[in-house]
Amino acid sequence: MRQAPVPSLRRGPAAPAHRASSRPSQFGLLQRRGLLLAALASIALLAGCAKKPFAAASLAVTEEEKHLADDPPPDGVLSPAEQAEVLAAFHSLAEFAPPTDPEPIITTGRRWSDVDNAVADACGQEAVQVSVVRRIRSNDGNLLVYHLETIEDWPGRLVIHRVDRPIVYVAEAQFGRFPGDPKYRRRCDALLTALEKSMDAYGRKRGFRDEP
Image (cartoon, rainbow, N blue to C red; front, side):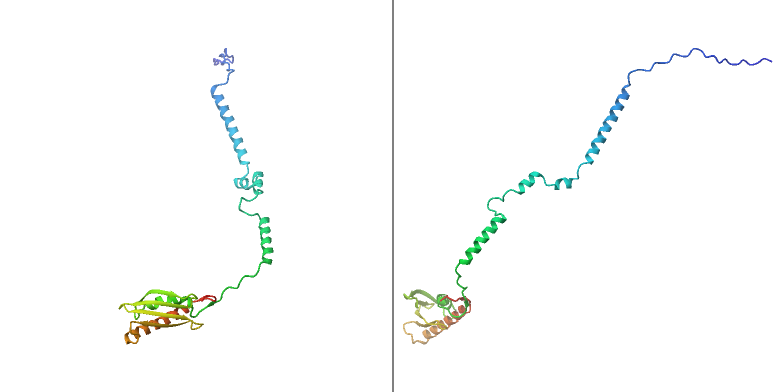
């Protein structure tokens, strides 16, 4: 029986191997550059995170700000030391200042200074209807004479004398050529009554103590 041939272990001549190129490929260069850029970016990020927070950095007082804080105040504004000096000067002056007059007392009642206004109000009343044509005043100011004219063109005159308080005044009136005529007398009474009411109304308003 024939034996199968044993395959020979002898190898033939090996194929020539390709020699590795000594220059790096272009893809390898690009890859190394990318890794280098990534490393640099990581270093920059870590350095940025190590900085102070914004609030802490902004609240810190710099040397320039300290210098500005020590500057004198602007023109027209007193420093605390200057304010104290001024107040001390005013206090020293107040010690030697004479006392001022007390505040005038507010009073009520008839006043001679209200006569002109009271006459104007009285003459305008519906029951009187008189206009002032002329006003005469004595040198001392204690006598006033008003020349009047009624709506009916009657001539008239109102004489007011000044007296002491509380009465303040005494008045007399006359209308027409015949003062005894009842229609003239009624007009006189209406005028004097309106004048008294007007003087009392002005007297109820408050006035100063020294007001006449």
